Image 1: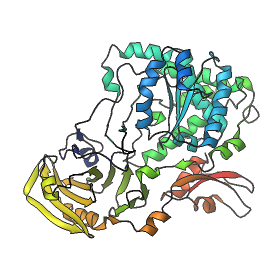
Image 2 (image 1 turned 45 degrees about the vertical axis):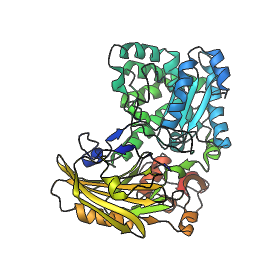
Image 3 (image 1 turned 180 degrees about the horizontal axis):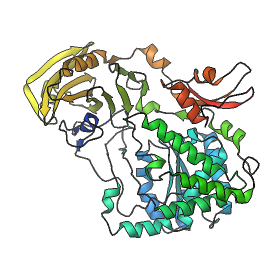
Image 4 (image 1 turned 30 degrees about the horizontal axis):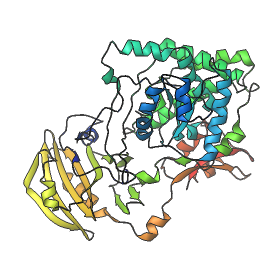
Amino acid sequence: MNRKTGTDHVLPAGRPGVALRAAAGLLTVLLLSACQSLVEQSYEPSVSPSQNPQIVDEVQKNDPRAQVGAREHPRIVASYGGEYKDAKTERLVARIAGALTAVSENPNQSYRITILNSPAINAFALPGGYLYVTRGLLALALDASEVAAVLSHEMAHVTANHGIERQQREEAEVIASRVVSEVLSSDLAGKQALARGKLRLAAFSRNQELQADVIGVRMLGEAGYDAYAAARFLDSMAAYSRYSAVDPDSDQSLDFLSSHPNAPQRVDLARRHARAFGPEGATGDRGRDYYLAGIDGLLYGDSPQEGYVRGQTFLHGTLGIRFDVPNGFQIDNKAEAVLATGPGDIAIRFDGVADPKRRSLTEYIASGWVTGLQPATIRPTMINGLEAATARASADRWDFDVTVMRIDTQIYRFLTAVPKGSAALAPTANALRASFRRMTAQEAAALKPLRVRIVTASSSDTLATLSARMMGTDRKLDLFRLINAMQVTSTVKPGDKVKIISE
């Protein structure tokens, strides 16, 4: 959740109707006075990364289509949490993409590359040379050749004019249906409004995907990278999909697989074409050492601006607040709100709005933003020394508890939803609001983001000892294997470099 998630006129509705897995979807439905489509019809998400950082003016001079990219660039950056600024990582991506540009069908194209500050796993491009890769993808990749495999695949879509073909096909349909946006005004800098949205990029056809795979593998080999990296990363993406699927509330709408379906035949095809460059394991450069050095310290998961999830607890050092969800609940920290789901189709939404007028909290609850509100249930109260108010609401098949709390000119809100008549509403809402409090100065100072750390295995290390050092997950071994592309039978030997997630 961002530092400030809205203003007093940008409010969620308490009514159900749009499902995002049972009750969770109910609390994601927003009635936003500032709601707008994130991407207009002219947006063409041609997926293709490469590099050689250029200023925007230079990019636009070289490509008349850059006006489209220039217009959409700020929205894309805001959608994915802003730019991730780290000189070492930027140099790494530039090195990889630059090698691919030199062997592309248009090596004279200039590009502007942006690393997006998002844990999602994605890479794509806008017309005019605006190229994007998320830090989440960089964290998953095992080496430079795997990142090159993703980027070369996306560049292939562009050089093969797949984006133009797809755009022509989609213009005959309702283009708006390919975009799902949840845009929420957010005054992150105190002055400038940013938007966070979700993009569901329309999929290329099966033949286009296979053609891009073939071109991408060729580019990999000609650039001197391990041509088998494409097949390896497709396997890693499949493993990532299986890992994420274990979490029923996982939202992959920003991720690569939402627009790039995986299939076993694609892996087989990639390996078959890679053989043109030599046998597997003895062909091309993987670039592992310099890649791991380039991502050592890479931010992982939630960014400080959106707060952190640690087990059953949400903590936000900048806002200085924290709360706990009951055991058995899973927290999903989104930019616009914190969502949690639990047994029995119980869902929780937490967010905040600015209230510079400091209105009465009982009047605020009754101001019209909660559908199905039961006015007689509105009660003022105190929660851990904070002014607060509570109420009940009911709509369709759901009962709600509404709790609001004030800290200075900010109002924080809990919405708890249960199936109508469920006895779980009161105990869940009571435990939730009782846990909400200000963080101490010591707690805030001790709160640190998670990062990718590169460690060298010692003679006493095993998968168990190394994965035990992982933080921020209760599936330590599963995540360790995922980010290191290890199988159940994999082992480590002294001197091996591996990724772990820690502060």
